[in-house]
Amino acid sequence: MPSSSSSPTGQPTRIKLARLRGQPEIFYSIQGEGKSLGWPSIFVRTSLCNLHCVWCDTDYTWNWTGTRFAHQNDARPGYRKFDKKEWIAECEIETVAGLVAAYPCRNVILTGGEPMLQQPALVALMLALRQRNASYRFEVETNGTLMPLPEFDAAIDQYNVSPKLNNSGNSRKLRERPAVYRFFAENPKANFKFVVADPADLREVLDLIGRYPIPAEKIWLMPEGSSRPLLARRRKWLVEICKAYGFRYSDRMHVQIWGSKKGV
Image (cartoon, rainbow, N blue to C red; front, side, top):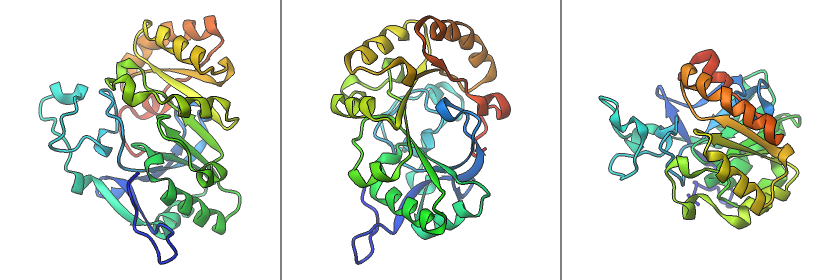
């Protein structure tokens, strides 16, 4: 787990956030996916990830110059990997808390990258915000490969777990951690969102939820895609799969509203 700068008491004082348009990526919008779809929320996007999904739409959090990871954008003219120094904003936790507190909202979504790589720093951020206002509520978007620390689990209100399938391009050894999946399957604060690109992905979803097991009422299926036309094509057959198996459907509302624009 990446280390953060610490105070003399050992508490983290800094956190690595994604940098977008020259600023730490903190913004006020609506949740576009999963259980909290449509809920006004403040997003805090951390940098760094332990996976490398080929369709990731925030690859500026991990796809660094010199790495061997493949991405679907490799075929796009002019696409280049990201300079790590330019795309990470290392911020004081109190500064981040102040930026979050400036918005008229108390639902905060910790996203990434993979936020749980920086659990101690995020615990410090959650505590700092709750010292300002006890009504803050926190969700974390996670790929489900990292076990929560006890203090992180105590502070978080909702886990949005998005296990990666073979369509992500990650090896099974990297993306599937049985003990962690079992923890989230049994945790009442956790829900699961599977990114589906093809009807054949259903077999993999059914295999995962059968082996761990994950109740149908905790499962959302979401089409993979960062464009309205692609989502429209995949939505039609994915809704039918959700109806057949009793899963919940999640669209990507932010893509429907703003397209592939970031920081909204």
